[in-house]
Image (cartoon, helix red, strand yellow):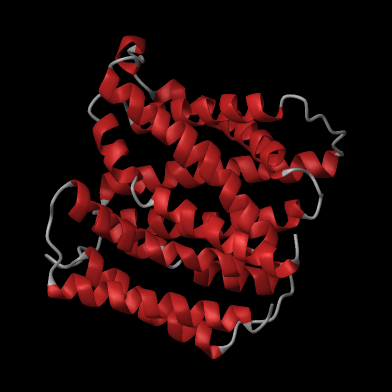
Length: 296
């Protein structure tokens, strides 16, 4: 595969990942009727791990201690800490507030890349695109109301955005090891599940029979096979090819897809304010990507 084709495939992978992640709120909302957030996370990533193990069971590699430390760190940051911070934040503040704050992740990614990887600071176009996208996300998230500030919840959401940025940077470095993306993602899932297990000590008992109720079963399969196994592979592949900063700007699309999904699935209407938010978000994304493509 030529570099141009590889980049095109990576951009498509990032877009498809965000397309899937932007619809997961529906499944999670359904599952919260029968399970706690920690239980949902553990079940979905166990399903994802099983699927990835099936696909890469014959892949065995000798890992150095340094490589295992990187993979374990990625599992802790991207699978365990990020999702726990995000879910806890949702118990303190509005989901729309968390959505806006999470859109700051590309800024963290660019900043951390400069500090940790000694990369050059993106040009002005990236930051102009970032500002337009943030305004667009705000208009989308609060098209029907105003933002409520909750220091504890907002701080947790900011922490989650920073953690995801660190995870993406770590994945860029892990990509240099040369291992297949499916194998790497499987190892990261395994470490993430191990780090997540202690959280069960604070959970009530799991009703295993509810897992097999059709409405819960198929939503868990979607989150486990689609949003976890498939999407983390495609996201990690995109980061490996494009880099952490280039891939992270696709996060701007999450609220756009969420709103459009609400129109199609829940038959909601798009207000003029929301339509303007979509437009600004897309312009911000394009500006950021134009800036990045000049560096390819």
